Length: 528
Image (tube, rainbow, N blue to C red):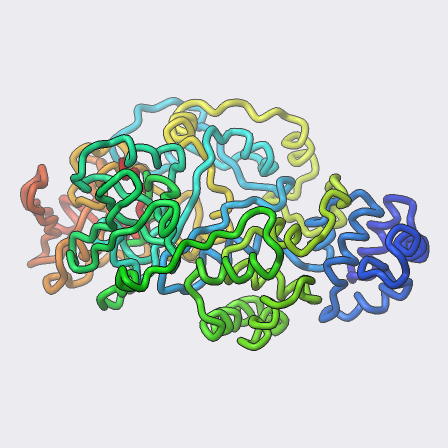
């Protein structure tokens, strides 16, 4: 269905024509208003490169009482691109991710316990316990969440995050536990990492309490990089890092991260508020993201290339101009790029632009009229999933949800990139949560691992430090699994010991005592 016909059908569900919408928008906002919808809109939207302005789309939302995000989807603008691009964008520094789910009516693949209850071994394929079930609306899964976490991505240049975290790690941050630092009188930084906002961006760091309002960023690898910051003026503790999705095949360049500027050059903290003007929001958010106009423009080029749409690119001069204007960009794509570049919530961006979001519609556009793909398009399955109340999960799935307290749905569009696997699926995931004496420190408190089953031969790793050696999943002759580093020596699979570990070096005859299932590409683990 072409876009003009799609718009015509959506309006038809409300008994409206474009001519009538044009009249109503003139009556409600004025014919010279930005919100006026022209009667020739169909001819404009027939060209895929032309999209109505944000003001006109909000007017359509107001007239039809359909959600603004759904109207954007009609014009091929998916707001859930924002969390995905924020996560995948290449950055030198650590960044705060957007964990929003902009379409609560989106269909999400879901799982069910297998009917036959079996004991859970220390390591096993996750598919041994779970199977694919009918898709669920995002709103139903969001209702299972029992806590509100923040998420960040560790940058190549975050000196204070190493060696506890690696570049590309996705960290979960518990804001409820930021007070542990203040109430704990100990000055020993060992054991806890915090996500800290500072004038140059963000960092994951151990902290030493110097006084009630002063802390020191602690770097075990580089003591000279320790920096004192005043809480509330030069730093804000966003929460304690309690979990990590750790990539194990990240191509770290091995360079020395740059860290923060010297203490003498630390600027006062500037954080935009909910009531900031658009100029203040853009300026404050850009400074917080640690980007110059030139760097932000380069990153916008990456966005434009990713989406194959030149409208997402913004020149450095254009970005500078936006910080002096009170109105949002004319093109929706530019607004989305700004949200991705500077870490701005899309709704906050619109509010700061003076958009009357209270006048936007609140109902979802029917699935057949908007791009809302479902994993299973069987109508009876979707109707059943729509009508059925999502029961509290039991078994292993229930225990996982109880342990983790939240389903990070915003990650769903980036699982291929996070795991380094093409067409990532349930069969690529293994449970390792029962292994209490792991063969590698990165597997301590791990729950799940992603495995590339196409890699059956261990890579030479003698020149690597132990912590950098690739990890593999081995199937032993007795049917149990082992996860750890591995090398091939004289026909034997050798799993080395590590200092302080519970196991000595182990040898297995390749093909007889054990075989390699695949290489571990990502680890989900707790850090507390």
